Image 1 (cartoon, rainbow, N blue to C red):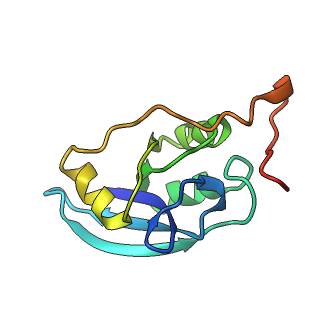
Image 2 (cartoon, helix red, strand yellow; image 1 turned 180 degrees about the vertical axis):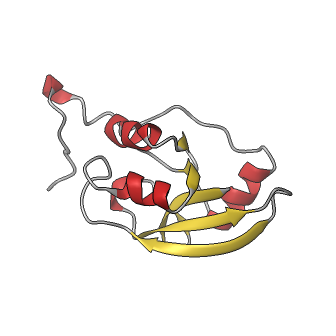
Length: 125
């Protein structure tokens, strides 16, 4: 299993589409982290980039994220990547907590994608 985490510095970036990079954790059947790698983040919105398909190609099945708009959630879900939102803190500790069953999806997204019915990014671009 592979878990992806949007990262800035050493903590979960609260804004999925604008993270510095993604940390990918490889986890064995005994729920031990066996490997980590980093994947550069494409510039721009997570909902419009190809990051979901890239993560899928790398074998990612779970994304532990901070905040995320519904568009980004949809593109990840379309790739069969399970997304848990509302995660905060040091990346490795959050993944270890998830593996122990301590991390639950907050169900909270960022809602500034919804104005006017047309899908748009409103992050100051």
